[in-house]
Image (cartoon, rainbow over all chains, first blue to last red; front, side):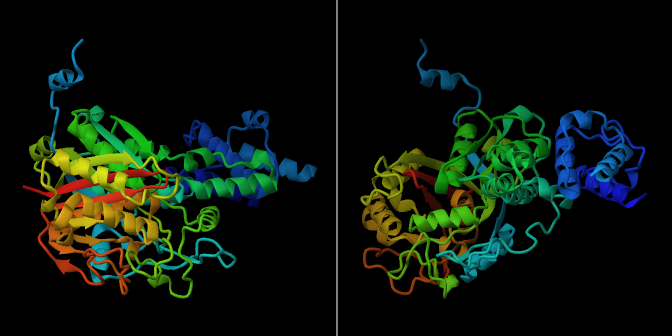
Length: 81
Length: 426
């Protein structure tokens, strides 16, 4: 995992209190595999926005499914700015 | 039309006797009933400098803060802490102790007959303050998604319903400094009237925050004895200069006597009366004649059907303000007549400070402990009694005394008065 991916996993683990961090893989689907509910997603968005200094719209969130999707989205944003 | 009284007798299980079967607490004196009772009867103060925010510019720089790790048994997973306001954390820890202590099976067999009623004066004020700071510095889109769930008072009883599977009557009580006592009183009523078999109840508060301290200072309500924080809360003493703000939670498990006996529960004491009134006088000053406070105590005593001179101990509201301490003295004299000189009184706020919405609940627990142990906790810092406060406030040293009946008083900004009357278990 690269640095962004590692930080994304940390933040997801911080929100999903019942999920063991070792079970959070890059290919894990955040809702289906990790069991995140809507409030968890909002909480994750807020943490990611704070951590990486960016804004994620609800439309953009709809296209994100796996842990890797999150990290890729963040890296694309960082590259664009 | 059937008169209401007839309807009540038609219901199964009306006029139930109500008992306390579990207790838990977190205060500046420590976590757990045992640690609290040890400190309280030893006359130890829990008041110290404010560390929760930078109070250097504030008129008051001290409070009764809960210290260090207040969850020694790990009842809240560490990772969940950031999703809970401090007022919720205190209550969850106190509830875990109370439920463990009661050995009530959770989830209960009939969840709809088991409820939760918990009071808090100001709920998640720290969360609100932090949320406001975030939207002012980072913009409204950055408001924390859990701000509302951490801010709202009734979310806490909701959380307890989830955790313990209690699905009956559930609500928060907002009654300032009487919240905890009002919650216990209303929980008592729900069981007494046959609407529930068991209720988790009490109060919780965590408002040692910048806004709250600044606000109480602006109201000139807090002591500013910054040089000697441990001596600042001095109920009934001539040199008092206001109350000392504090935090924590007290949670108890109430059950109908029948329900408790059926499962062989340990019974701490019985609640035999509850009086709820309002002064209808002024929004922050108590009626100096103590009319509302007297009426609350009178109602509790009349409900129990006892003579007031049978009361051995009164855990006073005793805030360490001139107005409260004098008014409460007047009210006790009016209730008890000549017997007022014989009753043991004390203010545990002299050691814990004033826990606002949790005060009535932690003091209810202390009152029950006085009944259980035959020890009346002292009022510390009572060195130079106010001449207008001339009853036995158990100055500075705990006293041995068999306590059969005891009252716990709570009075609020807003004029609300709540008196709970406890009786030694049969």
